[in-house]
Length: 400
Ligand code: F0G
Image 1 (cartoon, rainbow, N blue to C red):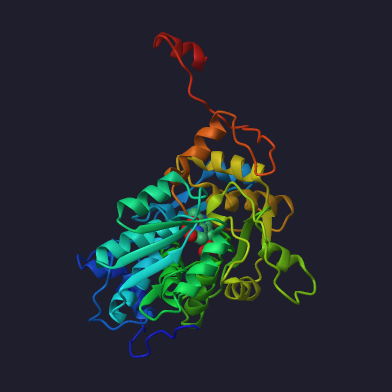
Image 2 (tube, rainbow, N blue to C red):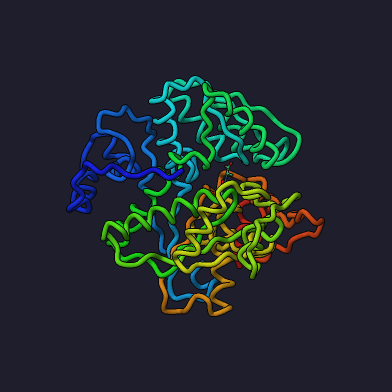
């Protein structure tokens, strides 16, 4: 189900209205999502549930650009949202809708970030919140957030896809409101990131937008956002949307490469250290496929080694991100090498989660101890492990 935006509002000069709102103290104007409310399916008297999401930075990343062999690369850091991931831009809208409907209980299945985000927004809205996660497969930081925000977390034997299937069954009960990205209100919120990005680039969209792909809600949302901007005449072209998956969890990339494309075949046993995107049965693949097809983008895969190295390089730019987000820079490097991205083209990579979301991964990488799911030890070319010293005098020797 898609949602039509409100038809009753004059959008003749929305760019000016949105810019003016940047100086306002109204909580709706301060939110990087609700600032674009003319394109959201709510009336002005709606009480919103917001944590001041959106308004995330756009970084110039010279080391990452160099690594990809591009003169310039721009990173849109969605990890700078209130709970540290892009999920907040969708959750503010989905939880606002849940409260409007009078839901008693909000639920989701999650690899961790949706859990953290829903738990926070449910707490703000004073709603009961239940979350299903795969046992032992969620990073400590994400789990800690969900617990601290007061959600009831249930651990399920199996993987994310098992959790997703079970939560959909639970949500057949009408008093239970499901906020995974099959919920169209999540997509409505996340689509505003396309608006914010276009505004930050003075309404000149990049040639390429590169996003990680898991359950495929994010790529669907960007597709919808840019489509609506184009239809409204606010932009003249759309960026090519490219989705990057981890090699071990890549049903969408397989579908893309299949010349017949007769059916979508799930991955029964998805595997990747980028736990956020360890997903074999993405629920939003059809909408994501539309985004890729309509914009002339592509779907590619990157290896565990490529993800680890790209992540370390993004760190060296002073930016950092979680492993799933680093698929983007790894993917761009590959696309440049294959001449799919040309040197003169503009590229934006979307970093979906904050570097502190998975510190176990970071420490293992830098101490040369990162083991891929197939048992191979990954080499850490850009490692910088802590060094034990007796006195600060040794620092100078180490830096020689
Ligand atoms: N990056 C991060 C950091 C994520 O947490 C996710 C998804 C993705 C990328 C993929 O986005 O699913 O829209 O294609 N995380 C979900 C979760 C599944 O439960 O937190 P997608």
